[in-house]
Amino acid sequence: MPRQLHITNGNTLAENILELDIEGDIVIWREMLCEGPTNYELGTPEFTKLRTTFLKRYYQINPEEYEEKFLQELHKLDTIKDIDEIILWFEFDLFSHINMIAAISRLLENKVEVPVYLVCSKRQKGEKEFQPLSQLSLKHLKNHFDQKIHLDQDDLEMANLIWQYYNEENPLKLKALIKQKSNFEYLSSCIRTHIERFPSSTTGLNTIETNILRLIKENKISSLNQLLGYSLQYQGYFGYGERQIQRLLDKLKQFYTLENDRIVLTKQGEEALIGSRNFYQDLKNNESFGGVKMYDFLYDSESHNILKL
Image 1 (cartoon, one colour):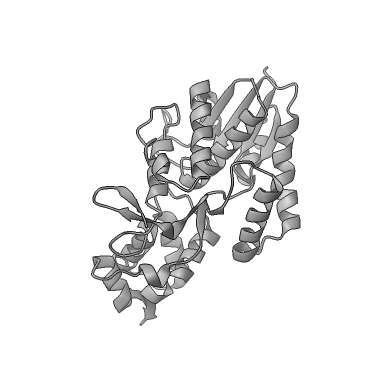
Image 2: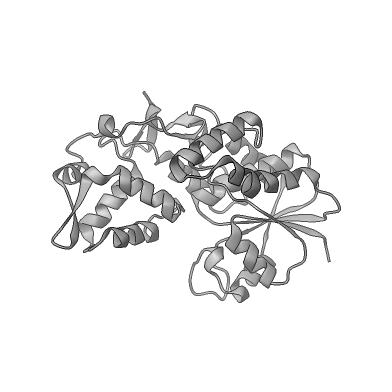
């Protein structure tokens, strides 16, 4: 039996792997690198300051907790030895894929030369439904593991290049990689999803923000908690967690209100949804995705291009 190292996106997957009795050590990746500023070199003082400042401000995660839950796990990748292969366990969505490419970058930085495999959410033969890894039964999770995908050197280098571009100020470089072929089934979709996070040139809202307004318009939603549930369930490739979605809902408060036990769009919400008014200046802030400021670019939904301001 080969000696394996498992890198998992979050605690739930790690617990399920333990229940499968699969051999090997586990490194748990506890980050949300798809949000906030980052830089290419993980774990450096500059990187750590960027992340702890962001996470403390928006998610009340203090530096001591960050050290324990992420940095200590990250540093385990710097002392890999006596390992025959590495298994990456990451979901299909943008949240997981940004974490995954960062993990791969760290492996390449450490010149790890053992085979690397990916276990990723997908509908396997004999399975009726598509579900995230964290929600699979142990039987189906084992099925995914048995059909894991080998990542060749080109795949690893492409992931590293995407992580590099993600940390630069020009997302147009990332857009150019959408059609690049690889063994990552969902990577192109995740890059496209990232590009759609920039504000619309028409309304100033991005794709997921607009989708939340559409959910309100098209569904009878009776409470803020139900709106949170709908937004989590119908977010596509974003993969945001509950706290991330709640932060979006707080940002969008001017666009909806509760009337007669139903969440409805305000006048501003109706205008944003039909595209009759641009709210760029109302929403503009200093938030970042990796190395780029969110509001330094606009997304054109018709041409799927992004424009530098």
